[in-house]
Image (cartoon, rainbow, N blue to C red; front, top):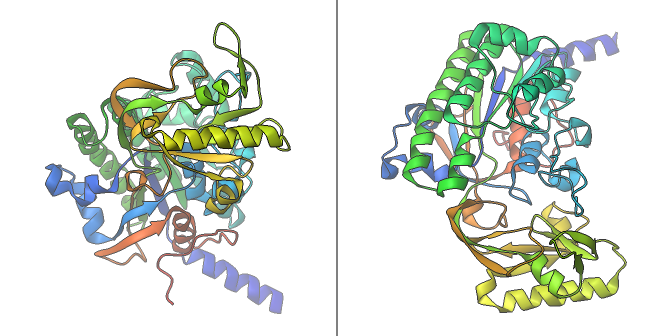
Length: 435
């Protein structure tokens, strides 16, 4: 009898939650919205989010400040070193993976919000969220690409929940499969998400939009093109919000981003410096033949972690770069600090460059090259330019509240609690827990 009573109490506790819709806007800098008046932005949906709910002035992201590790942290509540998605793509110094990304949910080593919904017997859904190929999501339009042709559409149909793409396309039109991120393609994704929420009534839904990231890479942050895109995204959020509250007026709407952006007009290649130090062997065509130390994003990896000579030479190379103001490298740290920061747990070093620079993976040519002005991320998370965004409203969310700064790991446990779910392994905390 006691066991039955406990089970009943547990089920009642889970049912007490409300549906949650998590929307990610890749590269949204929080000040675009919090300082919308200064920028002259027409963003009525974001303004309503701020007025009716809670928002953070800034979110401290993860190491590294790139898309896939960040998005996995936002649905697990743990750092990349714990969930296993350490970068957008696997470490592939000899380019044998043909530029593939970390698309596969089987690589995620921590429970997700979708897993929590499954355990509780709830429906989950997702449209284009990163690292969802093969995910145990009830209704899943996975993120995966290899091209921008009809072949990718067939691929996406095969990887998503059987029949879902066809069903949705009958309702809202053709889904933009492949690596296509424009205002038009993301608008269609928002239409697909709105339909999915109304048709399937998930307890947890996740949606991802990347056009803002594309525009900022091309034009740099805080440009007219960026602000026009933010205004378009405001309408996409409104569409999803309306669909969600038509199903349940208490639905929690949470809008986040994965990282900020910094302007740059120069690239620096740590690999070039490592090659000059004899740690990378390059053929006459500039292809890597062999290596002892090489970058993975802004991490320096050793082929043999016990190679003391390579470790020493790499350290000396980084000291040289830090001492040269023109290199753009302003600091680096070692494996112990990388582990403390929760990213690149096998790296020998992690490199920090100043805003104005982006790290290049090239292995030959000049150390520093000029570049057409644009935008970048992947810089150290301590830089304010890398801060990301958090806006939330709905049942159980305080109204008109501003939090100065949160940790990205706080997002998943907060949403889990609001939805009546549990993520006991999360390293973050529920932002609305009473003390």
